[in-house]
Length: 150
Length: 142
Image (cartoon, rainbow over all chains, first blue to last red; front, side):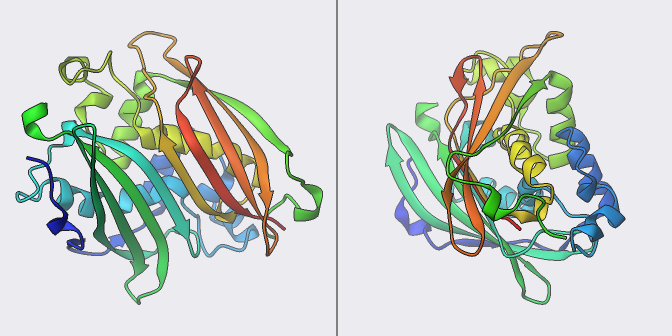
């Protein structure tokens, strides 16, 4: 069954803050093979004016994982991960994510559309410090093939 | 010290140094672990085939991350990338062999904006197909 627009405005909030660690950033940049010293060496990051090592621009996806998971497993939406394709992704930063940040995230379903038998979900996830400073807004478009047509 | 590239030194059309990335299954396994995205279509041929794909495909976010390196390597300070967005236009098929896939990434300055910022357009090609479209970054220059 296709998703209807009654789910627009639905929100999902992470159960606990995400603590950004130097080693987690290192694992991530090892995986993408990126040797920029600002990700790995606190002194190099300080040379650029950062408090500690920073995360690459796409790292925010890791922080959105919990709320994305809540969306995908929401029983009322009847989504399934293997029927979901990532259509678009955008990150807008007010400042870079750095090691030591304690970040909350809230995902909001902004829009639902339908095209060629697919549900098209637009989501917005706001990532902020526990003190309420907005750090990053992550906008995603997800294509979902409803079960009947799988 | 902020970005190493100075706003006054670039113009519309300035090209960023191009890069070529090899993508093998090991990279997808590492990315799955580091990102927490264990969707089976990114490492399991059986499941990828069952959902109609020709084989295992790279995480879109992995491709986006690699393409972004052309921008962050150019500017030096990754924190200078204020916005980065892409549309995933084609999947990157990653065969289970010693070659893997090849991702060729180029970038150019598309617009000069206010406050010493520029918009960079990124192009990423694998197997002669554009795998990202409307891939753009807003970068704060020095």
